[in-house]
Structure formats: C-alpha cells, structure tokens
Image 1 (cartoon, helix red, strand yellow):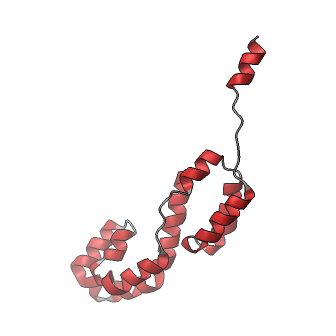
Image 2 (cartoon, one colour; image 1 turned 45 degrees about the vertical axis):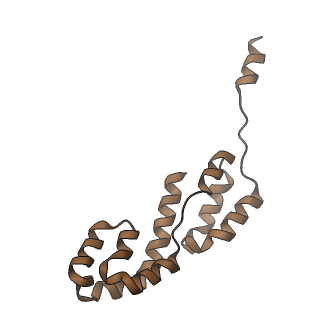
Image 3 (cartoon, helix red, strand yellow; image 1 turned 180 degrees about the vertical axis):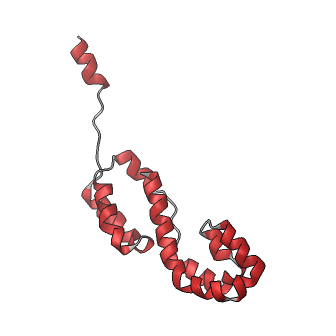
Amino acid sequence: MTNNFENQNKTEVVYVDKQKVDMFIMTNQKYFPSEKIMFLKEKLYHLPEEKFSMISCLELKDPTTLLLISLFLGSWGVDRFMLKETGMGVLKLLTGGVCGILTIIDWFSVQKKTKDLNFNNFMLML
C-alpha cells in the first residue's frame, strides 16, 4: 500500500528536447558572448522543461540597438542607464560623457557589455 502511494507522489522530470535548445541558441546567439554559447547549450540540455519555458520568456537586450542608442544618446548616458549602470549614466549625463571621452569608449564597448548583461541575467534565471 505505501509503495503504491510513493509511486504516485514521485514526479518524473522532463528535460528539454535537443531541437528546442538548438532552435533557442540559433535564434538568440547574437544576444550572448560567442565564447559562452557552448556553455549555455550544455546548461540548457540539462534543464527541466518548466524552467526552459520560463527562460525563453526572458527579455534580452539587442547589442545593435544599444550601439545605436550609444551613438546618438551616449553623451547623456542613456546607454548606461539601459545597461543598469546608473552611477555611470549620471556621470555621463552631468559631464557630457566626460567631455566626450567616455562616450567614444562606450561606442566600442557597449555591445560586449550588452551581451555580458544578457548572459548574467540568463544565468540568474537558471
């Protein structure tokens, strides 16, 4: 009697299908650092189906969009505010991008920072 009860309470974990993982990686690889794609793929293969559906709803920031925002609104710190770097955003806002120097540096680094932010948010969801 107890053995039957124990079998009813056990739930089997269903892992994500390989095709779903490959499709997710293929459609979202531009949002993550290229050196971490294989790591993400391995993590997703061993993920329960419920968690995968939650992760697929995660809002990722587009690095190209943030580059454009940095080019046009970078001196006011909008790019840093979008990257959740409020302190640097305020500094750029008050100093005009530290007289343009920090703005120019951000033009070359904002895409990498965006991909790193997406990766860190993704890892927090796991």
